[in-house]
Image 1 (cartoon, rainbow, N blue to C red):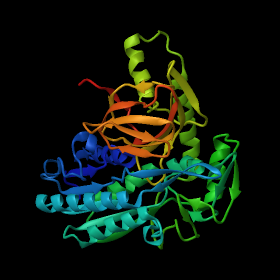
Image 2: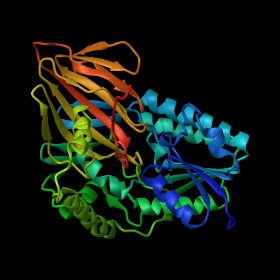
Image 3: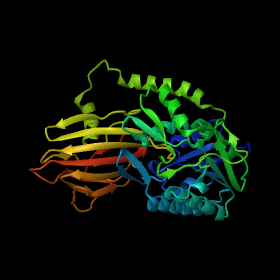
Image 4: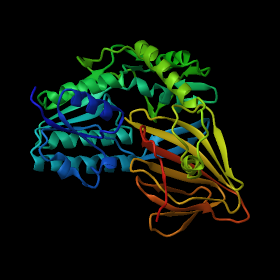
Length: 429
């Protein structure tokens, strides 16, 4: 297909979505980069009809924003998908999107999925992905499902997920990872081609064992942690075999080798990090300092390439925020996580604020008690061991220590678009 088409990319602000949008625009097509931040929400149906009007192709590279943060004995943190939330997202989003496509007369539905989805059904997340695929297959719209292997960009996150102290426990299972650029290029080819009414698998050019892959990454990045090969080590909740993460016969192969990607991307990351850390020639005004302090006061932290050790900032004499870590999420294109410890002295509080449309927050009170108000709901008190969440775009009116005599601690975890810069705004109501 060489004629100019209108193509809607659902999840167009994520890691793969942005690359795909740029690729297709450079080829002269009319592209709509659709996401909740642009006013298109597949969960609620908001903006779908308008975005899809006149579209020939829809590409869905969106992902569920819902995760549960679970501390595990012997490891700092482990993430597991929230089964019900993931299923609700993919089923609701899928039904809304496919219905809107049928009404708009869309001729080709392309969806990004994951190699091994059918073999990893012990995971609630992969069951939800399978449900998404089944909805697509059952619809009347011609389709192509593209299953991709793990991305090179997420190897650092895989290492973090298996970290126990100064060692990283990893399975020796085979995998065939690929560069996100190659994923986007393969998606562009499929998007501009005819529907295959089936599944296309894409992978990198090299099969490698997971523990070996992470070891190569650590050596290149000069990370001193050691890799422990463990057959029972879990890959985001799953025990792997040599068949779990590799494609079947005749996948489409991307051209980029891991070593080439490392040699290109790691120096770029270091240069970017060095530039970001360089002192500015002039002192910023108080008006420019205030938003940065507000971000930290809200327990959100700030955007960095990677955090390998905790950092802390005393906001005033009654509160402290510690950024525990930040890294991209494996298998969740375009999303990053941040873990933040908020410590309130007696009577301490944070300013009222509103989170961006891409941020999902899950908070657990570690000690003491926290007063919290989300949107126009009642002010609630959460005590040690209790949790609450905030959805994208929620307004947090009250966040404070419920006690005037005892301290309180809150652990907040954020899932947010990796390219999100303004993580919160001050309340102007």
